[in-house]
Image 1 (cartoon, helix red, strand yellow):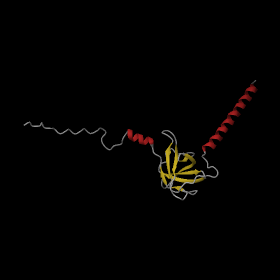
Image 2 (tube, rainbow, N blue to C red; image 1 turned 90 degrees about the vertical axis):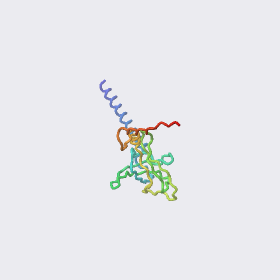
Image 3 (cartoon, rainbow, N blue to C red; image 1 turned 60 degrees about the horizontal axis):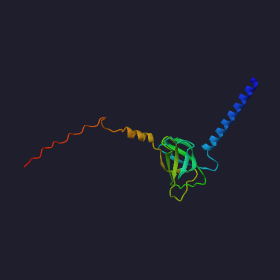
Image 4 (spheres, rainbow, N blue to C red; image 1 turned 180 degrees about the vertical axis):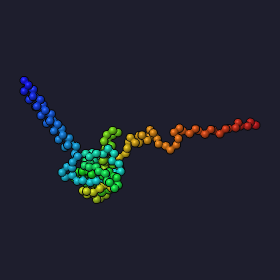
Length: 170
């Protein structure tokens, strides 16, 4: 009887490992962190990357056209450099604008690209020059809740109203 229980436990362990391997394979294929064959890579520099992470979507007009493949810090300028893996069927004008936007108040971030009007396309290895970094929503909310004014903590007392003299009657 003990031998049957050992085989049952072993079989269950094999099933669990197979399911884990299946989930890992699925998550790596859907996540799209690595460049797919045929995609071309461009880059964009941002002053603030926020919560942008490798695997984040790159969209044009709300349609996913690629993914963020890597984010690094440029040591001389301290700018965040995002490498973008773009679908080869999408040709972006050279004067396009890239902006980091959030998926929601607590969601992640993605890059939204607004195509420019240039007749020249961005070449593989090219760079988007016009960028807008991430906005720190919690910092903005905090500055509204706790304004950092330069005055006293307590509001200044209102100056007394000038005394009015009674009107003379004639």
